[in-house]
Image (tube, rainbow, N blue to C red; front, side):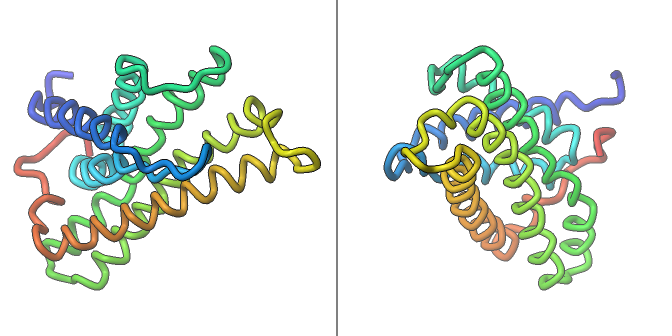
Length: 192
């Protein structure tokens, strides 16, 4: 653990705090559709610092939902899945940190855009998969009469995931063109 930079952890804490603040901006349309703006800083951080740092910041983001009261809990297991596991898995975007950083360093903008969009897809799908699971098992009873809980969860979580993924990818692609250094760590991290 002594090799892990304190700066990386502090940066991750700031990212999680920024993500929770962005999560409080009302983007709900109806009861089940929302755009999760907190994914933008989390995916950016994951691409900057790697998977382990991204998973850790995502976990902290989930904890901050509890601390701010920004939760909807039906049961202990559902709360654990949706806030601890799901938000942690958003850090999976960090799997593409090395290709994104390499393409930015080598000024290969088209490839960088491809990897950034792919990272937004990976992080969003990894997170919303767990929301889908919880939606099926715990929220499925709220499905309209005659609708399968699987479809109910897929439609509610899939539409939110698609909107979140689109907004995240668009903002990060714009940032890669205007401020590409945001994707590059300022020092070597042992977390990559």
